[in-house]
Image (cartoon, rainbow, N blue to C red; front, side, top):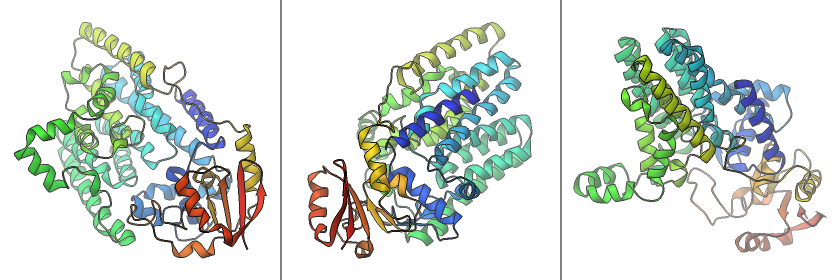
Length: 456
């Protein structure tokens, strides 16, 4: 199952990428940052105007640098992501086999993990270091239960190196480990996770961006203080907010694939509650959608929490509970996952379609060391250079710099841009930006789909 999953999603994600289905956000910025590191440059990512580690403290990306010395394909990260996500089924299998003392049932639970809608959708959403969190958290849970403490600490350290807010899962996990396996190691995990998160926010990320936390706008009612005040003084307003948009549906889609069996003994599944709550509370729509990378870290808690609960059932009851899990997984997988035979379908261009072929032709006119501003999907294929911008940057700021929502000003790098590649047809706002700049450039190539401009 692991091999089939990795092969399928490698082929599918590489196909999406080759069909111009990826973008500066969130693929090109990682590709540029890792490439810069592999060539001995500072990883200042001009696609977003921040240091690679000022966006998130994803130091796990350093492990990918050697691969950039060997492979030149821009599809590399998609294959790596698919393999790492698939491997997450192995610790689920090991944990289930030991907990349930049944290899067939352990294999079923590994399949339940891979079929969970959040797993596949995260794999398809461009590239994110967060995709590795499902595997690292699953390894940590299995290792703690099996008493394999070296594996446990490796998994915890790797998880902490992926993203600063993984502490919202590792702190509760440490408490669960303290209660169920080893008190000292569990408490050390919780304290170390909190300390690491604080250091990443207060020291590392602030040193790169000048601010501790760039996403305070995602906390409703004006921030933490406003959220707490609303909870105590206007609880009905908070409840109305939590019931709005698709938040209840999101919780259902996350938990239903295991048939809610974890409720029989919810201690391990509860490890993911803080992260689930933060996603539900967030004003950022992506966080309460199963299609984005914010949810994968909770899936091992949910699936392995279900295994933990199954271990409490009598053998006759376990058969019925297992049947409930299988049916729930298959139904939810059919309804919401991007797997083969599922109801949900996605469409994208293929590499041989005329706009894609034309895009490759246009990109071939640009020297590898040139300073470029290009349409966002093209930057995903041109990111391996010191300076590249996602149009309308740098001619007018858009999702750029430490304050990503600042806009309107012309960035200092605008006069250094040598080539620009834009689609023939653009929206009104983009065309207005280009109208103010185009007299400084002349057309190098126009193939009916894309136009390549070079500075006069």
